[in-house]
Image (tube, rainbow, N blue to C red; front, side, top):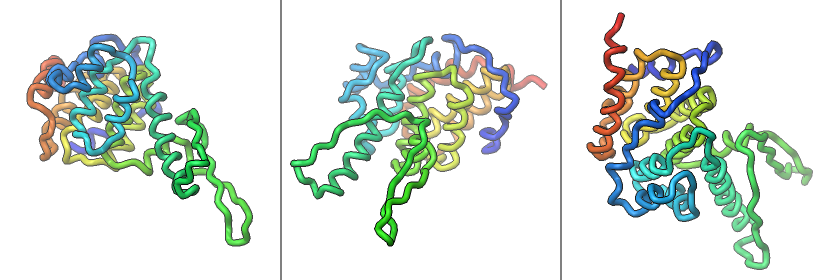
Length: 250
């Protein structure tokens, strides 16, 4: 079943425009987490991430299922959202500020100025070699650089947030999901939940409806660490079960 993540050939992808009725946009499982204050705040003020919400998403001591529910509550918009780019800047500045404080030994006379980072721009690193000369080398894109430095659960946060901020970017969302499945915790239900939704969305956009139910069913129920509220799973499957008949067709 693990091969499900490899069944799509994105080189021949025929993208069908998404609508409200889709795996990413029609599974409002945040409703199972409305007792959590940070989730309720997102419901009351959707389509944006406050600093408090970004801090919550970035803090890996917070339960992953709640962080994923928070993203679900922030929601989506047919015209796209800035939430992924906003959060990406937050993550990069948090990382760069930590390095800056290390370099300056926490000297308060030096002030770190926050920057804007394009996730897909090339990340250039400058290091001093043994001869005292500055050498530049590329670490790929800023997104690649960040993915290689964050804790594992943060991969699920970034994947789901990107998909919800621009669910029309089928190829980009799938590529990020595929990378994060390979390097993430497939045993953890809250980690695999957003991966399954992205995979199901890809199948829908390709017209491959027969794989929507099997993929989501596998991603939700094969992990042995069941850390998502059963009510949330029920909400997701209530929608996904509508595609079960297509899986049974020859």
